[in-house]
Length: 428
Image (cartoon, rainbow, N blue to C red; front, side):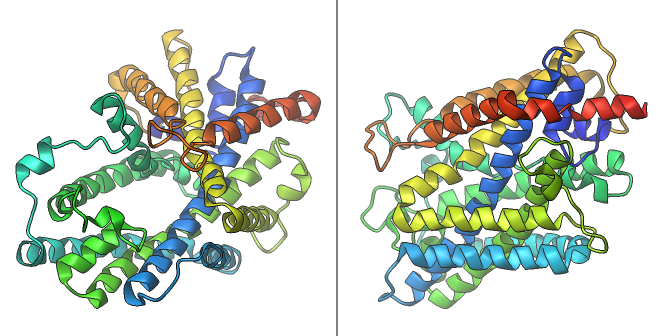
């Protein structure tokens, strides 16, 4: 992805890359479908992040006020509130986004240590630690799958969510100086830093979590978030746990701001290439604003409407919200595969200021194999025994969305959409 971002740093991201790297016979169709997939992935991503922030706030209310009843409509109101804040920021303070991102990076690193150090210091005193044998050799098949390996792959769906969105920076590329050099370095730095920090925090939690099968396990926490219960147990203080959780809530809200910025730019870019209904409206930039305001407002409307589903059914809401995982993995798979095919055919690639050199082709192939496995498991339910409430309806929503995208393409989309590569060739 970093290589492609260096070759073609545009707000379109994956659908632009597919348009450039796919075989000529399928460039237009694959690029169009990838554009729709990206729009779906990022729009539902806003909802997912806002929902995460809102329900974490509810978790704090449960922790500090035992009489508080966890209501679905409360979560919906909080989702709308968080999204409203993100939308207002992206409308009236968009020029300050780089400064805020820098501040968030500092808060992210300081917050990491503000959580890690209390866990290291207080856990041995207050809750005791799991031994290394339990942490590194004990596996729990909570979904009752036939093998631990299958259970592990299904359980990876939540962790894989943390590395999705690596393309976020590319959708801001038209607002970045020297994007061909800056974008790949940003992507690699972000994944490397957060990968190391995440691994350290993961091991720490495994030691602090306590027995998974006990009646007092954090998995059964009324807050809805086991980590909040771990904070409270380790510090032996609801106040300290609230402060530690608040750090994560602030970071999540800031993540929602970035999500709105990314999703709106991606929608704007695809509409600019006439890939969406009402493209002229969505791609319009009002003089003096220098932001795709219509795309920002539509992103807010979509998130608000999706959050209302949670009032009626959390299962239906989760099915739609989880669409982002399969959608973004799909967009990565298509773009990576087109790049690999071009390399195998020894066709010339655009110049890049950042490259993996002779390692590019095998890294490309391994990344496709890695993503393909998780693409398949993204449609699996969490447990082998499936009921309507526990079914992963993502496969139905994803399939219906793909049918609509293909139908729209053949019904109307192909008449106006030609793909970014055509404009690139005209400039050349």
